[in-house]
Amino acid sequence: MHDLIHLLPDSVANQIAAGEVIQRPASLVKELVENAVDSGSTEIKIIIKNAGKTLVQVIDNGCGMSETDARMAFERHATSKISKADDLFEIRTLGFRGEALASIGAVSQVELKTRRKEDDLGTLLRINGTKVETQEPTSCSAGSNFAIKNLFYNIPARRRFLKSNQTELKHIIVDFQRVALSHPDIKFIMHHNGYEIYHLLPGNLRQRIVSVFSRSIDQNLIPLETETNIVEITGFVGKPENAKKTFGEQFFFINKRFMRHPYFHRAVMDAYEGILPPETFPSYFIFMSANPRTIDINIHPTKTEIKFEDERSVWQILHASIKETLGKFNIIPSLDFNTEGSINIPVRKKDGEIIPPFIKTDPAFNPFEREGRGFGSTSMGSYKAKQDVRNWEKLYSGLEKNDKGKDWRGFSADNDQQTIVRNQGIPEQVFFQVKKKYILCTVKSGLMVIDQKRAHERILYENYLHSLKNELGNAQKELFPQTIEIESSDWALIEEILDDLNRLGFDIRKLGNNSLIVNGLPSYTGSDDPQEIIEIFLEDYKSTEKDIETGVKEKIARSMARASAIPYGKQLSIEEMRELIDSLFATKSPNYSPTGKTVIYLMPLEELEKRFK
Image 1 (cartoon, rainbow, N blue to C red):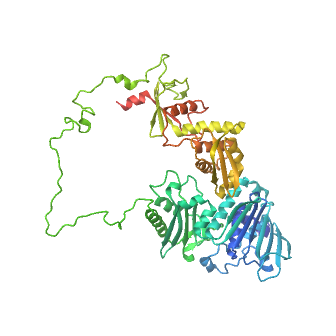
Image 2: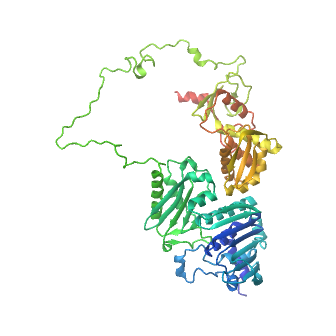
Image 3: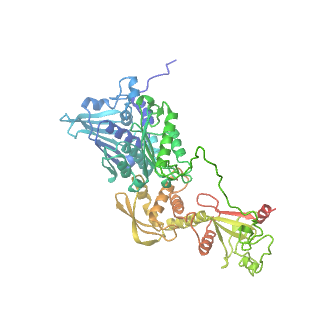
């Protein structure tokens, strides 16, 4: 019987290793940019084509490599960062394993031009699926120029699993942001398909955050600074009123290395407890510094999961630091012990007489007999006094049945099925708004309650979907067009769906530099603030990415309906409530919102009567 166990060829072993390190085009950007940072670069340029599927090019002005180093860099476990196991506990660089370039070379076509500053000529290296095709001297700039072409060309199954360009570009931008935020002293430039996404100049951390996201975030940042013998914490946290419903602006760094840490995220959320809008997440950019010997960064191939020696203490320090910062900037109530004269506590003299406070009372007071006092006054009615019940019928004017025997508002309901049936409206309909959130009206069989925001979402959703499918959207021109700045990470999404937004009834044009000009809005939106509508739409649309069963047009219509619907807290007139309900019952599915939530609740008369027994 032949032996069964054998060594894998290097090419196969490298492809297997690549599956752990290189998962998508964003992995290329992460590894190459981190290497550029470690090389001492002050300027790094990233060029992307077709979301990295065709090309990922990273150009830096770092230390460069010699001819021998350039060739050795593509061997597995070839590294300049460590030489013995103990070095793993002193790591301060981003890369150290020597796996990235070997993995990249195994699943793509690589071209490298590199030169050290002290050399006259550089080195040109071409690698095709682990096989070195060219290695020769060349004239090039100092530093390194990596061009990674046709990712997964030799593994078709892996390539087919890549997502849309918009999704892959989003992952690239997220990984780029993590490196750019942690190194504000480096200049970064990023292009995608010839369009400049980022042009980040060197500066301080606050300037870098504003440059990466948008100028509007500047007013949202609260500085964070704590120093202990276990960990130092700096950075910024966001104001609770600017919290968003989706993740995207939550960053942890340890020794300038991005990390994911759900345990520490819980510390942040607990610090905001009681002051966040429901189902929202605050922004935070938290940088920790600790002795490398107290952390382990070698527990995952992507090096984004970090293990701390004393996580519980770090959790408590982080939680207390954020609490203190929020209190210091009057985000949460706090006692001010430095305010003079705010609290006057009398001091008892040693031999002084204690005089109890005098309170004037009226022993003869009877709230049921005396006039002008509380609920017993004649002005409010009395249990003993005879109440004026004349003209009581006027209290119910408009609620009587009409001459055709229908109920006062023109709706009837089926008790058994509890489904709403639309009848002809009556001008004398009466509605009541409760807490500026619900609309109440009576029906023949009981009480009907309508959620005003969800009702408007259903109406807008069907209108938007009809406009998208038939290209019927008409914009209502704005008297003063408004310019909106979009985050760079959302720009690719806007470009992809801008035509559909205009079909909905918007009139939006690109200005460049991640800016849009809004010349018109659909006539049936519940808000007249273009900035608010676009921001809410983007947040909601991004949250639907995992919904693969719903089509793009349906997602756009659903997200735009949620962004444009009248909000809770808006006072509605009788005419507005009547129009809303008439429009609701003209839709195909009035009982449910576009996300499947209940719009109408019908309380049968029998249930009401039970409540009063």
